[in-house]
Structure formats: C-alpha cells, structure tokens
Length: 66
Image (tube, rainbow, N blue to C red; front, side, top):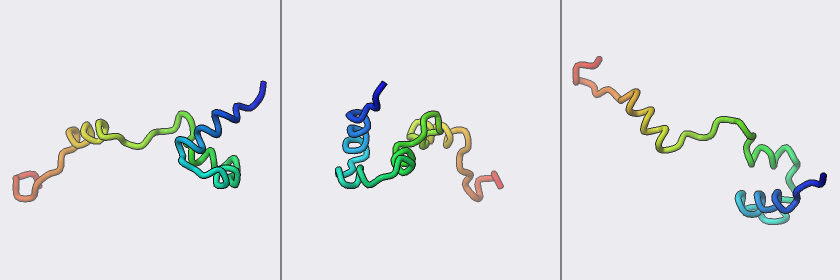
C-alpha cells in the first residue's frame, strides 16, 4: 500500500493554499498541525455560537438581573 501523494498535495496546495516550495519545506508535524487532527474539536461555527448565546444570554445592567 503506497502513500497517497496526490491527495496530500491537493490538501497542501488546494485547501491550505501553500506554494509548492512552502509545502515541501514543511515537516510532517507542521503539516499535520496545519491540517488539524482528526477527531479533535472543530472551531465554533455560527450555528453553535447562536445556540450558545441563546443558552447564556448577556445580561443588561439596570434590567434587574444583577
């Protein structure tokens, strides 16, 4: 079973928008850090942020919530 270089290049040059020289200068650790680890929490998206704001609304001073 070989390594899928075309897929890795598509990720580096396409998704990460690296130049070829930048891609080839990366260490495997740097590349994995840039791609993100599978199974790790993803950044909070708009939908998640809206749900968080609904669950924990800001309180306005002087509105009897102090």
